[in-house]
Length: 247
Image (tube, rainbow, N blue to C red):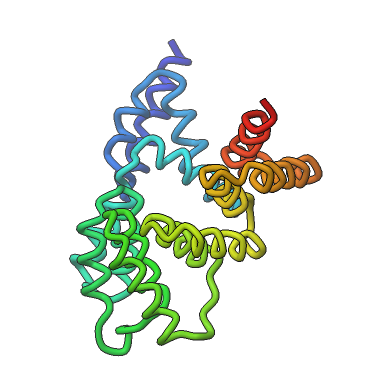
């Protein structure tokens, strides 16, 4: 009986803490789940704050996103309503892209690209990303070309890879191959190389494609474990490409 009473008191304390600190209301129902509920709240919400560890916070943020995928979007929607600043629009638009709500993201990026921010490279890259999500490829290409025109010193591996994908989507295969090859040399991961090899394969250049796939696989075998884990999707795609072209 004493154990049940202590468990009940702990649940009440955690619920009060969740309410006072503005945690999402779904935590109330999770905490009420016997044993696993209170443990989840302590691990996800309390422990990272107590430890103050960046890696723990990042891991717990990932768990929170799985529990409530829309939490970040709702937060930035609220922030945008309150401040209506360029920074608020920027964060909201990025979350809308993550949610694949590209039309809304484009609107917010365009609203942010005004005044001294008219040619802000990060905002323009975000706009091009959202336009690519819309399948508005010519517009996305124009946005990135304007970005470079007004920000010639701006460098972005993600932007370079996006440009290659846009050029491919526009049907300019030879230029796309050139852009992928160039992006692969600076991109921090195998995605650009794998996309380059996949386009080579689709262009009936199997020998070149196989060589690039094999380079990705060989490099992955020498890479640290955390890199292999984070890049698992693209490493597996390279391995599949090698198997496919060897058959």
